[in-house]
Length: 97
Image 1: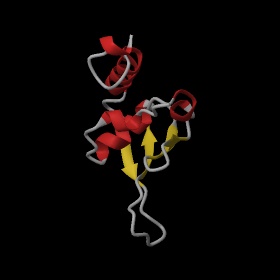
Image 2: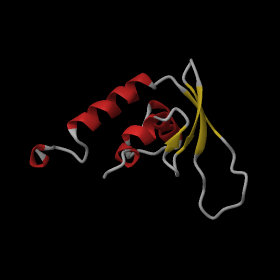
Image 3: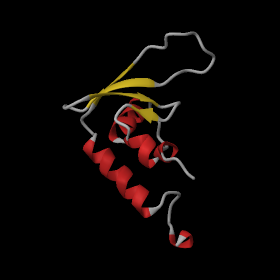
C-alpha cells in the first residue's frame, strides 16, 4: 500500500486535512503575543470557529479541542493558525509515527 501513495500523506490523512481546510476557511485567528523573551518565536493562536474558542500552539502541536493530539492530524483550528502564520507546508501539521 505504501508504494501506491502519490504524496507524503496517506489518502485518509489527505482527505481529513482537505476537509478541515474547507471547513475552516472563514474561521478567525488571532496570534497571542509572546510573554517571555525567547530566541525561538512562539506561534500560539486563539481561534474562533463561530461556535467555540480554542487555543492552538503550533510549536507544541496542540489545540484545546483535542483533535490534533488524538489523531495526529491537524484540526481546523491548527490549519487556520498555520494559514495565519503563512505556513505553507500542511504536511508539517501531521504527526508521523
